[in-house]
Figure: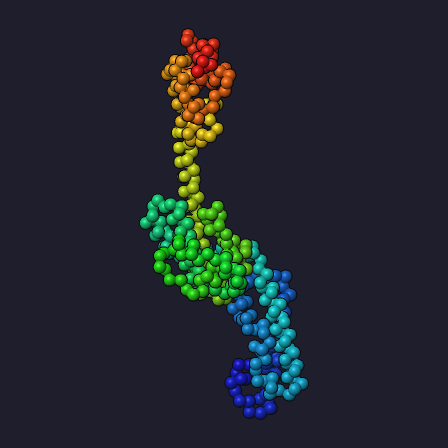
Length: 355
């Protein structure tokens, strides 16, 4: 059809010849497309290598050929009708291809990743990790943002559907700039690419940037082999690998911090139950210190001094003493106060009530 537009057909015989050839080729194409439509599912994304759905699903793409004006009206209309039918079939095929079998798509990308794993290469994150042997959670979060920004700049989501106004408004560009290299130049369409990515991503525990693979497989399967350059396919693989490496480091660092908190907590908190009469306004951390203070008092001082000190602590609102001395006596004994001569409950009660 392209050649027909280039040539000046000399006679009706040539017109008839070209018309017949185009008609027969349209029949052949429709047979192939129909076989694909009859399949229960499409298990290949390589169809897009020979079918340009953006153009071929529009009737004008086919009808913009001068053969339709050169042929006799009856023959021309019949050929136009055939191409309208072909366009409808291609539209059906496009819909079927977009209905991606997620499990199959996942297997395809895992096979692709396995091939790339065998290629010798050093990842940027590996180099960064060597320069930062003890990264903080904040640094790891910033590396996720930097890695993601670099991936978007390479155009991995360029072929996705253009974002709507509300999607653009949801992009917080100032937060992205805060975590990437200062002064890094961003392309003019960067906000749009960020808006596309939000369709397939989320933050887990406000620390790990996650990709929802079940959502993004349809897009990737439709375009990865058809339109992506080799560099973009590698960038996609390396992004996935490095993001998982960062997640692993975040999980490990969180575990280390949790262990440290436990050790610190064990070091500060006594194994026994805290003194029962700590004032309710006292924090847990300060309560531990008050418990230790009362315990030292009970072990080291006599009853008179103990009672006077407890009353002062009550005035300072460190503890809240009950009017009945019996539970206080029992609590002090639990913390180490002797019960022998000079430490009887009766003697303690007399001193307690006289203060």
